[in-house]
Length: 322
Image (cartoon, rainbow, N blue to C red):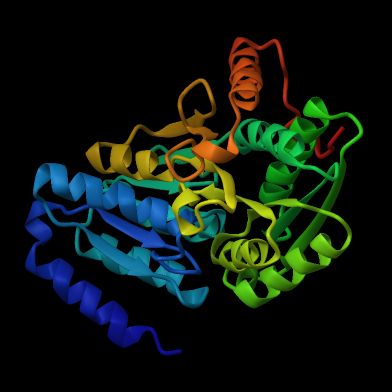
């Protein structure tokens, strides 16, 4: 794909209002309407726009080469700050941020050690622990599942936390896990997600957690069709299939983008349960699926994690899941 026409349009749009130093957000593969990770970023940008009445620039990546191109074009036109969504933007962020030391940058899910970059990372394992508990408590078969997107340490981090939470609630629970693929295409393959979920259901799994971006949409549909339960990720996805979605492991990428647009703080920002960066979602769409006892136990565990009484293993720190 030739990215030049699209990037030229961005550059022209930016040029018209460069004097106002508009912030910019660059979504990764899957697009801003993936109903998950990127969409959470979009929601944060829109919240900032609504509150301030100011515009912002945006670009959706459709091939790897565009990551660096988009950042450089926006930087050349004075966009500030420039926010990159996703770990895959780390290397291009480092390169472009070095070239434009007077501009501010922020990146979600990666660490770039530069004086003009804020790196925002999350304790996904803590939120995944809570939904793992809920999966085990809701399961009637004692078998729960996990479908990840691209097989990378970050997604193993979700899986590891989920398994720990499930086993905390039910030491005898069986956890089945599959990854969708090893390339960025794994984030946007609903058909493959559905296949993996169906295979898990055939083995007795009756609750499945998807940490797979747009691929998760296929997992949730398969769960609905099979009369099973599913758990959403990143955005609150409970509304997608009320009665099927047990909960969602909310990762507040929206808050990260909103705060970055208001002003970046160079260094590493870590958001976990204590900081309100991750949580489980409870609303009218899933209230009937979450019993008072389930909520009591999960909230107690949440308090214990925040207090340090329960320590959830971070796969990326330990490279192990116990």
